[in-house]
Image (cartoon, rainbow, N blue to C red; front, top):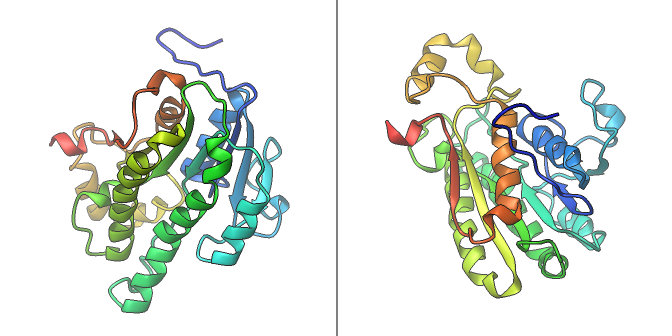
Length: 251
C-alpha cells in the first residue's frame, strides 16, 4: 500500500512504449507504468532481453532498436497497432569521443533527437486513435543541458535543446489530434550514464553545487513526472517541459 502523501496512477488497459527502457530513467519509467497496470514495450540496442542479465525485463515486451537506424525506427513503428503513451527516452552522450568533431556532433543528433522525431512522426496515426482519458501522450526526456552550455558534450546538449523545441512544435501541430506532447527535463540523475562522474569528484561536486538540493535525483523521481504528464491529471498540459532538477533552474 502506498504510504502517506503518496501518489498512485492507474494505467490499466493502456499501451506504453519506452525507448531505452533497459536501464536508468527508461527502466524506472517502464516499471512505473507496469506497476500502474499498463502493457509496456521497451527498446534496447542488444539482440534479446537475455543480453541484459543484470536488469529485470520480464514484465515488458522487448524490441531491439538503434535510434540512429532510420530503417529500424520505421520497422518498429510499422509493427505497433495500438499505443497510448510514447516515451522518447533513448539517448546517449559521447564524452569519450569528440562531439566537437562534425561526425561526432552528427552522431549525437542522430541518437538523441532525429530518431525520436522519426519515431514520433511514424506513430501519429496510432496515437491519434487512442481513447486514453486525457488523450494520448508523448513525453520526451530532455536534460538541463538543453538550457546551458555543456562544452564536454555539445552535440548531446544541442540535441536535447532541439528535442525540447520539437516538443513544443509537435504539441501545437498535433493539438487537434488529441495528442499531448510534453517533456521532462531532469537534472543530474544517478544512472549508469552518470556513474563515471564519481571518478572525477571535482566535476561531480561542481555539478551538484548548481542544484539547490545538492544531490542527484533518482530515476524513480523522474518516472513519477512522466506518469503525471501522461495521465488525465495533466489533461490541460501540452507543449511544456517539467523540470525535475532539484532547483537547478532556480539557483
